[in-house]
Amino acid sequence: MRAQIHRFLDIFYPLFRRFLDKTTYYYAVAGSTNLALGWVLFYTFDHWIFPNKTVWIPILNHSIHSYTVIAALCGLFSFLFGFVMMRFVVFVESQLKGHVQFFRYGLSALISATVNWLLIKLMVDTFDWNASLCNVFASVVVVTISYFLQRKFSFK
Image (cartoon, rainbow, N blue to C red):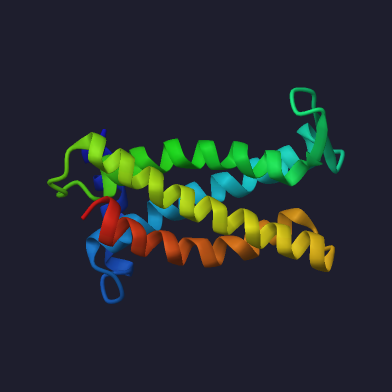
């Protein structure tokens, strides 16, 4: 499967060769795919699954903002999909054992998810902006942080 993905991606690599080395190109494609899927999921959850702005959590006997639940669900999906893509498609030359990569990726994902949630919370609660648009804005910051965490830490 990895070879098939690489063959497909390599078709378009000449367009980006002047700007990106192959690993960074693979990262950009995998990350963009993960990000786009996350945006689609966030929008879907925000508009169709959780159309109310609050979600009642019976165990907590408390309601929370729907974007908190949505960010958690999207974060879980993004974590799993992202790890598989990074481990098996992007950083295939890493000598770290899989469980070490998974743990480190988990830490970097936790940092990224926290920054994402805080930025969305700030923009929605402070400026009363649309949560889906705030998610897109926050993603730009989080992608930059995530790239350096993964390249220098998770899959070193």
